[in-house]
Image 1 (tube, rainbow, N blue to C red):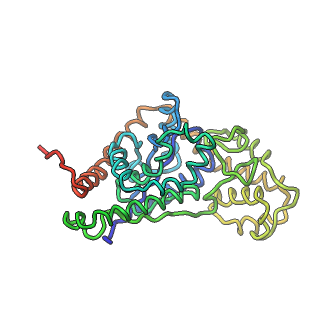
Image 2 (image 1 turned 90 degrees about the horizontal axis):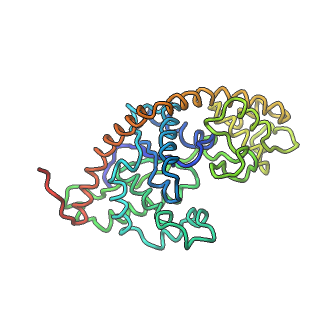
Image 3 (image 1 turned 30 degrees about the vertical axis):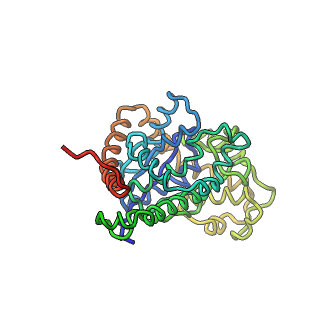
Length: 348
């Protein structure tokens, strides 16, 4: 297998309000990763329309996610920040991958079953094919690493399967075109961190979600200090005090969730948090968590609002990012077309 330069790719869907789970599980990690690798961060609007979206709201949400990226500390000059629909190579490569991926692979995707529910006959083909487009998102840039949550791990495994099968199916053509033994990398997932999976404030067994009907289940990145305080104080807990060791969180999902959120916001560990707060009642711990959450999120919320008020500036960032992204994706797709045997239009 050829050696590939380290390149990180990840994306966030522009659907619904961004919340604390999106920030701690993804965006905060994106900021850290740009310090050590070349990164592309994508607002995945093609994925968003696998479920129907109000066009005006979608446009607003694309800009809001971009604003969240920048407000959190992603530098659009150092990293590439763009929206998926401005780079047509994503959709074009997805079609080629549709002809590489096997139906049986997609039939095993649990997220489609969860999202489509019992009425799957009425689900869009796009929702079913979502993981193939995700593979194209990643491999259009021949990305080596992707930070993902546990719920996306199966999709990344499909990306690896598609890359491997493409490399095997077209091995002779890949070699004949001077690409060595493998054209696509076998992308590695980056999973982890103290709050890689943030749970609902109302039910510690369910993931924090934009689609939860209760706004008290999540802290939105646009919430002000009063809203954050109210939601933390109303968060579900149990009657026992906090344990002094992480092992004591077993079987206590709500306690584990709040300690994990505190650790992630603090840049610490569950163990360190419990060393400080072990034995405390939740009323005292929640007070400390409110103070930390407001301190961490208020500046981000204020900067998001400032950026969203200037859509032309955000659009310029996205346009520049799309141009830089296409400069990487276009040669990849040209090479893929040569490898699979298409006749390409000659440059004039």
